[in-house]
Structures are given as C-alpha cells and as structure tokens.
Image (cartoon, rainbow, N blue to C red):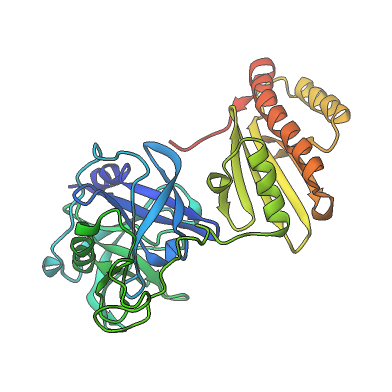
Length: 367
C-alpha cells in the first residue's frame, strides 16, 4: 500500500482529543469499538472532547487508564462501525529500517502525517520496549497511530526526547493488544490497570475499597460524587458561566487552559484569557478581503466601527476580524453576557453581509 493510500485510509479513524489542559490524538479500532490514546493525553479527565473527520466535536467518556504503559481507552461518542477496519500489526515481524508513518494532530493542527523509518525496533526504557523512529513527532501527536507499510498499527506514538533530532518513541502494538483484550470483557466499565502488576481493577474488584486485589498497590479511583472535571474559578469560570447562559456547552467550547471556541450560525469565535496581561480577547475571523472594491469595503468597516461600542473590525493580514478586548476586572456577569451576545450575533450577521454585499471571500478551511 502506498503512503498516500495509508494516509487516506486513516483519515476517518484518527481523531483529535481535547481536555482543558491541552490536545492530543487518538484512533478508532472497530474490533474493540474503542478509541485508543495515551494516558497522559486524557490526564485526570473522566470526560474529554473528541472530534473526527466524520463527526463534529462531542463529549466522550474515558473508561480505561494505564499509567505504566501510558494507554487510555475512550468510548466513541457516535457510532463509528462504518469506519475502515484498522488492524494491529505483528510486533515480532517489525525490523530496523522498516518504513513507518506517524499520524496525528501536532500542536492542534488537523491531521498531519510524517514518514520515517524504524531506527530501533526494541529500544528499552524503564523496563518497557519501545519502537524508536526518526519520523517527526511533536506535541499533539501523542496517542496517534504509528502505521507500517501494510497499513497496520505498529504502535502508539507516545513520547519524544526533547532536543533530540527526531527521536520519537511508540509503544508497540503487542502491548496495546494485551491491554485491549484484557479490558474487552469489561467494556463500558471504568477500569484502571494496576501500575505495579498490570491487573485490571474495577470499582467492584478493589480490595478494601482502595487496593489492587492482586498485589495490594493503592489505586486512586475517581469517586462517583466528584465532578467529572476539576472545578475552575476566577475569570475562566465567569466566561464559562456566560457561555452557558448563552446556550453553549462549556465543555465542548473549552479547547485548552483559558481558551474557548464557539460557533454562532456561520461564524466561529475564539476566546482566550491571558492572566499575565489581564485581558480577555475574543476574535471572530469572518472572511478575506475581496479582489476589488476594497475602498468601499474600508468605508463601510470604518462607519460600522464608529457606531459600535466595545466591538470593532480589524485586519489580520487579508482576514477581516471582529474583536472585543476586555480588561479582566471589567468582566462582570451582566456586562460579559451582553458583550458576548452582541459579538456572537454581529459575527453571524457581518460575515454574510461582507461576502454577499462586498464580495469578500470566505475563510479558508481545511477539509
């Protein structure tokens, strides 16, 4: 199978995962009806947001974590059984020099594939074998599949050595298959793999409510009465409270620490708060400058800026942006709700006006 065919095959199966602290990658295995990723991608989150090529961002449940092998499994938020049947490779057949492709979402970018070779098929780190590769792996690639020339999952992209020249490491598929087969009889239940003896532990099998029944290691199981997400406070909580009042799901809107993204009609608005400079910035990238009639367009934008309060048009390169800038101490619940309602409505209104009446070009979007 060619590299291009592999990339196209995996396009639907690879998903982007986001928590309130960052983003990562996962991939869907039909045989197990689970999304696979790294434990460090999901962290302590019991729910994460998942976005795929065939479905929009949804909340999904984390049902399995394994700290030692850095694995986590997620229940798909939608039916994905129609996706390609991705298979796991036979680790014993991998050789140094084999061509591989690392697929993921580095730095939050959508679907990136890098080709390389296996530098060492059995590099041992802390008692675990890893596949060392020279294909570029960056933050956000974690949890994505390492694919061989037969379009099989050879491993799970797991970590890099900072400062190294393309020193990437993937957990072999043999470890993944062992964990999947161990968890499959308990699918749907919340389970933790003991970091000491690798026994699968569920809430029902915990010894004395907190210990591994096999080796006695203390297992930190989430309590049922604890919130799914750690509570937030301050300006971040104020922003999320406002978003909820305006009908937006705060968990789906959250893209990272102090960052949110919401859709209003045909407009997408990105919100960010930087505690270091005390400002909340909200930007709606509406459209691109037209080829002709720019003088008339500028005149219109300046007049609209004169009539608006707290919101203004600006240019970022060729992009027309509708923005608001608020000092954090001025972000009151009432004032913030009014400002965001106004911004969302105007963003949805203006992107259509600018395209239909002034010939502006739609924003470029990745497929």
